[in-house]
Image 1 (cartoon, rainbow, N blue to C red):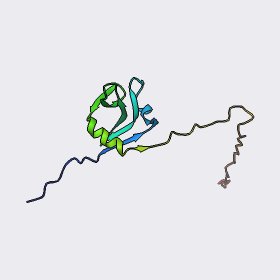
Image 2 (cartoon, rainbow, N blue to C red):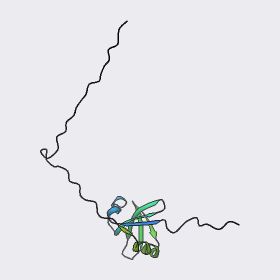
Image 3 (cartoon, rainbow, N blue to C red):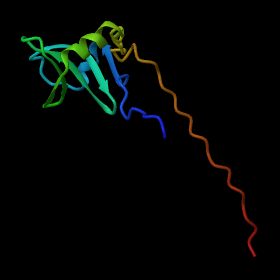
Image 4 (cartoon, rainbow, N blue to C red):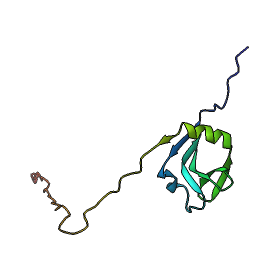
Length: 112
């Protein structure tokens, strides 16, 4: 007799706190904490006024088990906010781009 193996483990939830939720939610109508990945599903992790946790992906909201999310929040990673990219704003500050066009070598073919 074969031993029983679990089809779904409890370790498939990952929570990352930070700004990553902006990729998945359009409005800030709840308190967004970060991103949550459950297996192949990924979305924004939100907490409403009643204390319920939600996985938000666009307009779709899925309620999550509060005790499981609280347990995963205790061991969640915090990623720092990405640094602001600065681009040169004026023409003088931009680097000069030089383009070199090389001619193709053409080998003359003898005519018959």
